[in-house]
Image 1 (cartoon, rainbow, N blue to C red):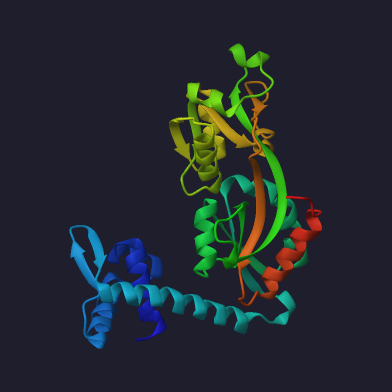
Image 2 (cartoon, rainbow, N blue to C red; image 1 turned 90 degrees about the vertical axis):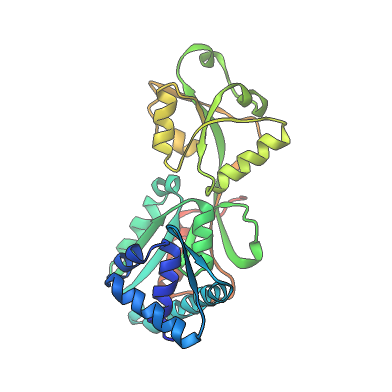
Length: 296
């Protein structure tokens, strides 16, 4: 068994397809099939079972998959440590951010690129829960995520900022006379909110539960601009952080404060107790410099 075989096996499970895994790994499908057959022969057991279009792990396959994830994460960390040379004249920083956070990171990204032009910045845009898992798996060096996080012991955390939540509505009708919206009032309107892999979505579900609200969810999306367009089209109302609302068309839309202690809190996270590359340390320093520490 070698690292390459483990990578092929893990990617096949992730993609649920030999063909897609081969495309992702830039090899042919027969190559991956042969490597996995050799792996099963070497271990003397079956790892995968085909069930229609699905690939199911046997009990042995589940163990190999979980161990493989851990081994690959450690190997990536080894590669990072070995490549962490030349005082940031080269390297790669893998950063995860939720889609609606990107517009708030242009400042620190610009600062980072000015100081370390030789470092390639790879940005992965996914919901907070997805980027948290990617940091745990070692697929990302750092991630910006919504706070609080469930398992704080897994991460080292740097709070960045806090913003209030607003209810985005059309600039028309009875909304024109309103100054704010209570959580209870949200039950009367179709809601447009983020996908389940966004921490803010989970926090809103908890808020609804606390206020006895049964939400009428009309649309879920991972893109704030799409949610705003749906509000503009009259599909429903959305709950968005204030900085996102500030980017929208004030002529057709308006946003009202949500009467709740819930706010949009963002922080930087990385794995607790693991090696932090120089490129990642430099990014953390840029964020600390760009955002003064506040009570978040």
